[in-house]
Amino acid sequence: MRTLVKWGLGAIVIPRWVLVVKYATFILIGITVYLASSPSLDITTSNGYTPLWSIAVTITASVSLIGSLRQRWERMEGWAVLCLAALLIGYAAAPLQLVVSGDHDRAAYSALALALSVLPSARAWMLIRRAGSTRG
Image (cartoon, rainbow, N blue to C red; front, top):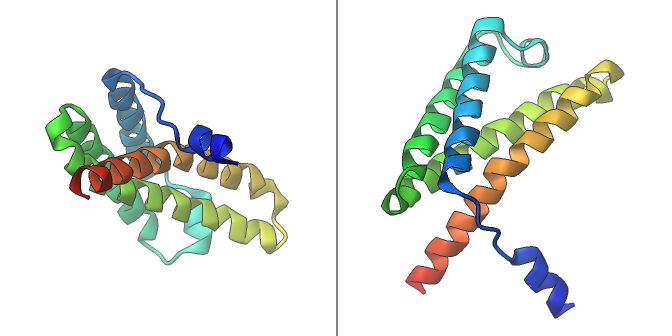
């Protein structure tokens, strides 16, 4: 069991440029949703929520990108990527709500949003663990 925990919590080192590309992709997602909207969010949320969500994604991804440029800015990245992960997990709930209501065509969108939320969630978890280990 100890080996499994060690394996599961082990860090994988990726080049910093991969983080930059990842965050740039999330910025692109935010801009695209702002320009083209998101039917799932439009149906399940109040009027005007989708543009606010897309702006929040764009801002948090931008701050995450800036924070990922230097190791000393990782605390800023950590808070921003945590917010980004929460926004993406929230997005996954919108199509899931429609699936539960009987619109099974939206299941793929929910699964895709959950898959996308894994990347920032994992980075946030790693940065939180690292911050905790340097303090305590």
